[in-house]
Image 1 (spheres, rainbow, N blue to C red):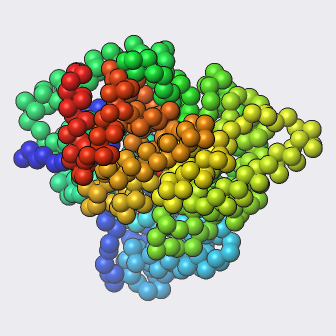
Image 2 (cartoon, protein in one colour):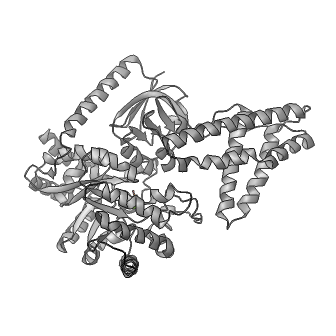
Image 3 (spheres, rainbow, N blue to C red):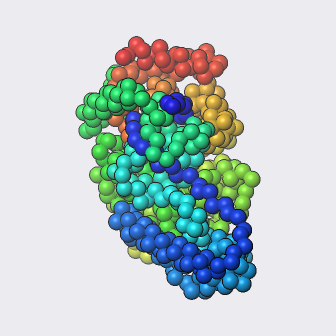
Length: 576
Ligand code: PEP
Ligand code: MG
């Protein structure tokens, strides 16, 4: 039966396709006494063989579709499977205890996993424990006849249905086959949603229950424009959505005409519309969508995509590639923002009750200064290849900014002393994403070269509403007069000191927010590349003076977010 579901629209576009369930497999089993150990050993051997063939297949696929380096993880899995000690251990356990292969596999594998995990200070051993866990799950799945989903190997058109997608799951998705995704949890600013936008895959998140309602292979429609999901649609509904998809395509073609234009309001005020990226690979989307530069390069993905800390040279190559790939336009590189939902397996961070309020971003950089210095040196060396701006994330106090900047200056002096060229025109700024920094913006503005407002975090901290939690997503209110008042203070403070202000949180590309932000005087709007053209088109229809009045009214006369939305809708209705 057809079923409709509403979630949060996370990435524009319509996808219609068969569901590929990316959910945890059920690997539970019973302990069973057996009388035929040879039969069990044969089952075990078959499952090992099948796992080996499967992993080899995945390895080849990942090497081709993603890269050789990413594929090497699977070599470690193959080594585990080829280890005679593991296989013989399980075999002996079967004959000694006369139990089924599932029981012995679990007993012996768990013994190895605990042993490796106990070697706490040795990240290499911890990784081996993770490899054994992965391999054991796969062999167990074969013993039980259960499917283990593997997004990297998808080779026909599907839409993915998952509880959640980690940033690394999202990075593995092949755009050719994955037409869209829908999840139970998450919000518009969770990193899987952000990555969906940079991959330009339609997505709806936070439906709470889609994985309960969809079976493998069911037809699913994902409406990333409005956040609607239709499960097992009838022919008529499919036809209606095909029409909606065609209309959206036509609209995109219209926007594409603005690709090489600059961004002006109707009355001729110029602003900058730039893009957010996670890796140098995103440059294609940035250039295709005519962004006027890069307002946020999230460098933590460089760390997350790597097996160990990226070296200075590896980082240098990535930064240089980005600086050279954007035709001299400015690139704002944010120093690494690990923590929160962005984990780094080889950086052993203690478990925290509140990771979003914990040890993350510049807090780690200022404590692990060697890692920070390596990143800064790579950036400084790359600075001569384009227009580099450096930005520190999660700044709460002026002292943090001063400390970070002092380290940057030291590294610059060291490089110059070694005869290495460094640009003498690097602006240094901060993210405004912690309310304390927003409130004190008038002091920060005296010392920084620019602000970039990180509304994804600023809103969650101001409203005390987790950006990843769909249960409190109703509190995630970018247009709440309280947020607008805070933004006004930040923007006015920067301008009073002659500094520019950008916004790299998702709010910058939000079509309801754009008129308000224009009115508040924001200089630079940084967003997913896929939002650039529609924003440029919207801005061209707006009068900057009118928008000033709108923002003023929203701040001074509105008490609720609904009132603000109503005001903006009135303005938008008048221009369309
Ligand atoms: C933000 O917080 O708005 C931001 C841009 O940073 P991130 O989404 O990476 O936390
Ligand atoms: Mg942030």
